[in-house]
Image (cartoon, rainbow, N blue to C red):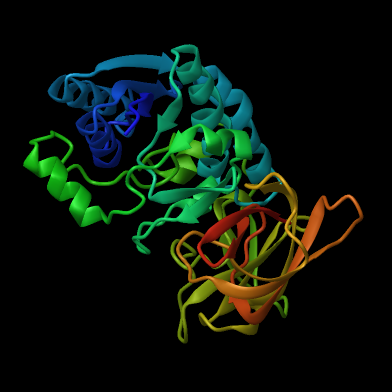
Length: 355
């Protein structure tokens, strides 16, 4: 087996730690890189970046590999955070982790790694790659509970050709077992949740620092007022928690937003018809094979944790910058700003942003 110089994105979590270990075990020349992508409020109680950096350094020490700490905070602010705020201000719910992968981890980080004479970068994502007839295919991770191909759908052929995913054939318990066996300090560290730069801090308080809020009414589709919202940007379609609507009957859910009247439309019951849609339009398309898939039958996810749904893809214009997905079964809480990701069996083809 040919050994390579590989730069691993060490995040301070268990997945990237085991990724570095597995590559070192195979004899590769491994360099770790800890990316500092956020520095606005590194000193507050919710920011874990200092602890993550210490954990990454401790792992590098145990594995006996070098580690660089690289600051991509200004690139992150320009490419990811500005978009994040713009989408929330427009009443949509963006997925910054998708953009962070495309713009930071597989662009800025990749460029840095190549400048260090690396041949490829490695991350702890649960995804797989297959090289066939000179084409790099992005595949789902074998662990269906952890598959992260959804978050990688914006990678292009060049980025994929320089990336490997050593955990793609493994499941999470196996990864933790390896980490415990070699006594890594990250073995029992819990998975990070929430948006990468926000962490587990209160979301509303965070957004308030950056965007003005405008309270308004919560109304039923028939126009009856049932409560007050704190600002449309704080709510997402399908949201149940935090609405503060009491009374008898089934729980309330967010069905839509009326930006013109600053009203939040709410309905009762998880299975209310207004929470379901049979089609969506997506733009800002990006495909992993570098070309647009043919129109026809595929499966798609409209959010990360959902089963693949059968759908038909058609393009809405000749230059194929917008596409429509029509689902065989209506889908619950399709959310503008989120990503719709297309699959052909295990192959992740790419997708776009839901309008």
